[in-house]
Image (cartoon, rainbow, N blue to C red; front, side, top):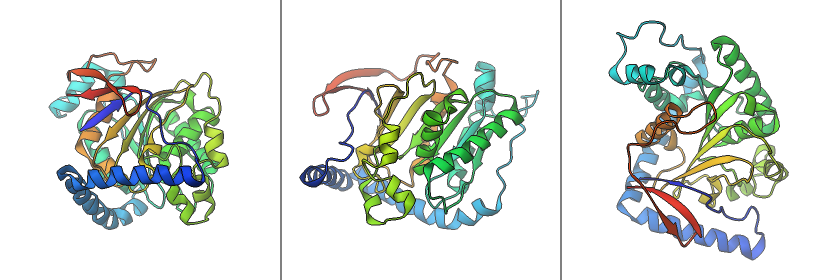
Length: 320
């Protein structure tokens, strides 16, 4: 079950020394409790299957071209009820292009299920890009993303698009939005398991890209800086069982200048995030109900209640 959360505090960016050990101990205890639960066991099983599927599908992502969909055209009678529903409800939402950006040492094949799910729900143009697995700098990859976005804008005629980034892909997209003026092109950025606050696992190896992913790195400090006037809306999915983001709460995004909704998952693994039906449904629902200013135009059909989360000292919205 997903929990959209408001203004939750992440783990400290880089507590250092004993502080870091305390943060990791708390994170480890949370993971152990979650993994011991029935949903945790189920999540671990799905994650194992996701790893097997990724190995099988990886070659497909290398040889297949990204392409730009032709969209729905001017006729809708051949479309499924779900596709027709979105088009009739909001033609602009259905036509707004969606660009998918993969994570570290991965390729666009990681989005096979998500792309299919979004197309099935009525979105006409869903494109997945590749960037080099030898990427050494988030900034360079963000410049490459800027080229992809400009090309997609030119080909489709839409001035603003949506971006969905998994893991490192979300951080690349965030840098583009915050530091390279991408907020003029990106309406909504959805991140899945992105280490917005860095990950302690990046300390295990000293490659240039992993050094940037360490908590408190110069890149993390740069992204934590002012982003006044940023027009992009952020929706960040994170999971308590994400094995790649340590501590897991560092996949949340908290920034005073950014409009952010953090959504917590209890028992999803890192690689599973783009493949989960509830995540796909949540992304589709978000992108189908936003106006030009990033506000929700249609009230959710799911009742929402608010109660105090005393552990975090913040208000949390829970799906009931």
